[in-house]
Image (cartoon, rainbow, N blue to C red; front, side, top):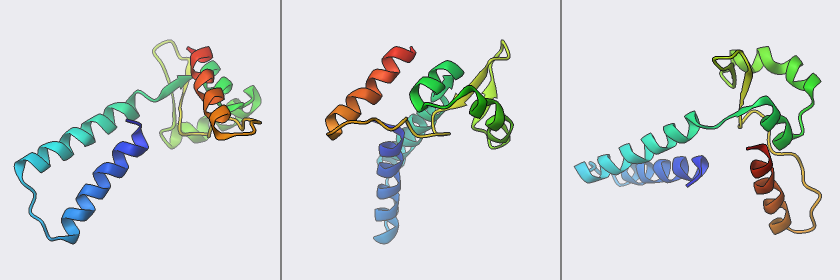
Length: 117
């Protein structure tokens, strides 16, 4: 599952329990815990090197230089052990794909991950 799906699922289950004034069972708490842990792990692994980030988003080197400090303060950019810049994938959306249909757009975005890695 993707991060947004995990979080939406977790939020929906908790909202439904609250709406019904439901005291969750241990199984429900365990399920929510598993969803939260999976979402946290996925969010923690969502870092891209600068070349990967630029390829995926279309950001220029100038944009990266100019926005790094701001993004670092916001927790969306950091440096690795070799002092290379890393960007969280949520900083910018993937570059716009000039596709005529949604399927071609999805293929282009998925392909950008393959080229970046």
